[in-house]
Length: 111
Image (cartoon, rainbow, N blue to C red; front, side):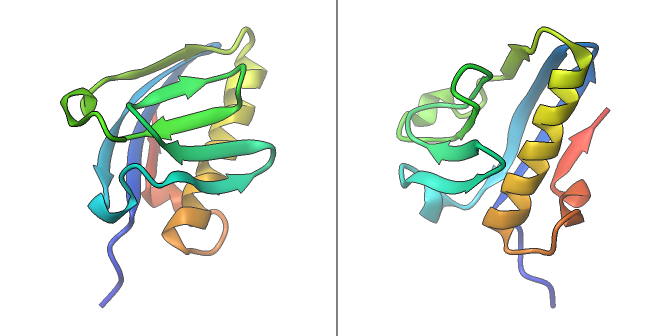
């Protein structure tokens, strides 16, 4: 039996913009601050879901449970920068979910 993923998100890329949401998160990770770091990006659980280009950070569900369904949305300026962010986010999820690189296609749905 395969272990359940700890974090699953859904992302949509349209040009330079990424939109998405957190689909699942292991409650034991809630509010634990930095969950993973790779490719100069960080995965954090602090307050509420947010995608930050300036901070190179994906914030997932945090201490504010009322904000759990808050959508992720960020304009990266260029389609290339948005695609690079998707690659980094996939690497973060691979790391936090304890899987081999590139397995995150299961954990990140990009349309």
